[in-house]
Amino acid sequence: GDDSLGGLLEQQLSSAQLSEQESRVMNWHIANLEYGCGSHLKDVSLPFWDQDDVFAFGGDHTLIPKGYSQISRALAEDLDVRLSSPVTSIEWGTRG
Image (tube, rainbow, N blue to C red; front, side, top):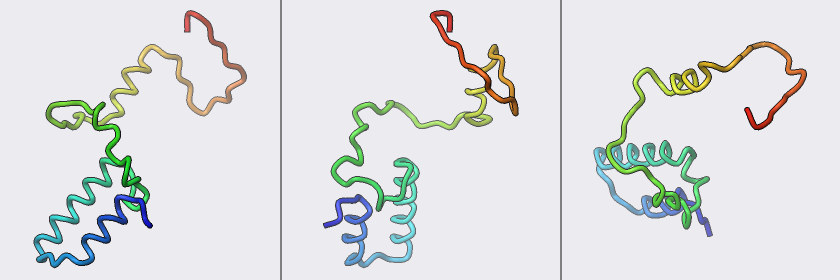
């Protein structure tokens, strides 16, 4: 059988008689779930799709104003970042 979350939803919805509005709402929820899982639901494991829920952050969901790129810019603020430059060696040690 199909052990994907999408397979189960498809199986259950194939016999459901949803109104046009109910169908639109269901499609929104499916799209939102795919967004949260980062994949099409046909590629998401049915038994394990929510295994990370115990590690989820509590509280309200939020968006980062001005986008997530501001986080990487802040982390790289004091780093010597060179674009379009070939890497000739990599050194690391206790000081970073």
